[in-house]
Image (cartoon, rainbow, N blue to C red; front, side, top):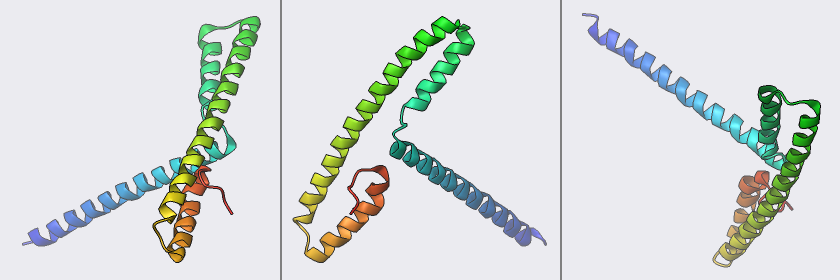
Amino acid sequence: MNSPSRWKAIAVLCLVFVLGMVIGIGGGAFAVRRALQKQVAAGNVGTPLIDHLEREMVSKLHLTPAEQAAVGTELDITRREIREHRHLLLENLRTTSEDTLSRLKTHLPPEKQAQLEEQARRHLGPWGLVIKK
C-alpha cells in the first residue's frame, strides 16, 4: 500500500544526495580554481612545493643548522629558477593568447570583436593571459 510513497521518498533522498554531491564538487572546484588563480597572480606557483620539501627535509633528515643553511641556499636558487620559468611561460602564453585573439577577430565583424575581447578579458584575464584594458 505504501509502496509508491516509499519509492517517492527514496527518489527524493537520492535526488538530494546527488544535488549535494554536485554542489560540493562544484564548490570545491571553484575554490581550488580561485586559490590557483591567486597563486598564479602572486607568482607563487611552485614555491609552496619547495617550501614543503624544505620543511620535510629539515624534519625527517634531522639537518644540522649548517646543513639547513646549505639546503636553504640551494632551494632558494630553485625557487628563483621556478619564478623565472613561470615568468617566461606566462609571457609565451600571453603572446599566444593575444595572437589567437587577433587572428580570430579578423573573421568577425566589429561588434562581435568587442564581445570576443570582453569574453577573453573575463575568462583569461584572471590567469594573466590577456592584457586588461
